[in-house]
Structures are given as C-alpha cells and as structure tokens.
Length: 113
Length: 117
Image 1 (cartoon, rainbow over the protein chains, first blue to last red):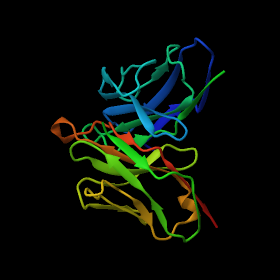
Image 2: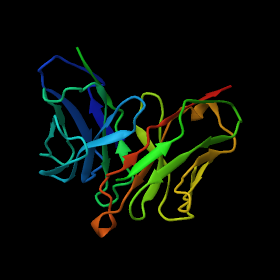
Image 3: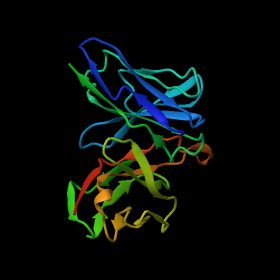
Image 4: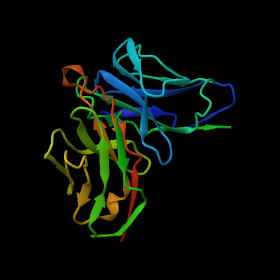
C-alpha cells in the first residue's frame, strides 16, 4: 500500500543532542513537508521541499535542518539549537503543484529527557 | 498575515446529535479553505475543501460552505457517530505563483470532538 512512514513513533532527546526523524514515502510525490504540532495549537510549517536537492524554510525553521537527497526520503534533524523541541512532528507529501491536498504520516512524538 | 481561528474545544456530543465547529479566517487574496481530520494515533487526512466563495465542500456527511462575506468556513454534520471522534483542523492556503500553494497551509488550533453512544 502507498503511504508515508515516519519513524520512530516515540523519540527522546538528551540536552545538547541532535536527533533525526525519518520520513519515507512511496507515493511518488515530488513535494514533502515537515510540520510541528503543539497541544492546543495548529500545525506550523518547519521546512518543505518541492524537488530533490532543494528545500525551503517554513515559518519555524530555526533549530532544525533537513536534506532531500532522494525523492522518497525527507529526514528532519532537530539540533541542540532548538530549545523547545518537545512536540509532535508530522511529515507530509503532495503531488507538486497540488500542495493543498497533503498526505500525512502518523507522526513522531519527540520528548526531552 | 494569514490566520485561522477555530471554536474552543473540546466538544462532547451524544450519538446522532448535530455538529457545528466554527472556523473563521483572515487572509490576503482569495484563499482555498480546508477541513482536515486527525483520528487517534494517526496523521491528518483531508476531509473536504472549497476553493472559492459560496462553494460547498462535502464528504462523509460533513459539509462546510465558503462564506467570503463573513470570512467563515464552519463544519457541520447532521448526525454524528462514535466513529467521528477525532480532532478537526480548519486550514487555508493562499495560492502562490502559478496557482499553487506548495503545501503552505495555515492551520487553526484544532477542535477535539468526542461522541458518546
């Protein structure tokens, strides 16, 4: 079945540590996105990529980094510069040019130890 | 900038009750409007959308009408079921160059709906 796979489901980060969240899709979508979800708040866009080897900052990119070396993969690294990383992270993809219909993964809950 | 405001939750209803979740927005230009639903432990799914004023989006018994005069996109369902229990997000996108939004959606804060038998 086609879809988006995020891993791990739960992740814990120690102070000063970088962690990487995985996102893989087999939908053959060109565009991929990372959103952050905090309790009682809407989703906020971290980074997005329209094509391999290209990506743009979203509204809250500080403290995060991404890469897009393959069409099907868009990993997100939460760096030690992100001072409040505890949140639910959602990866999404779409057919390029049809960005409003997003297909989401089931998310990764990141917590700080 | 763009913003979306949803009614405060959580909302608790009995099965077969009528549902309304209010959504109002602020945007430049002429946004498209969406409702996404998030079931427990899952990612979001597109529920319905409307791309211009007076359009009505509908899916699975849910409806929402794009009201430009009141900048609203309220979600309604005539008879809810236990299986409708989820978090509902209102969202908008402004079309960029070439008529595409590139996934840059602005989301409301979400409304938790719980339906009891």
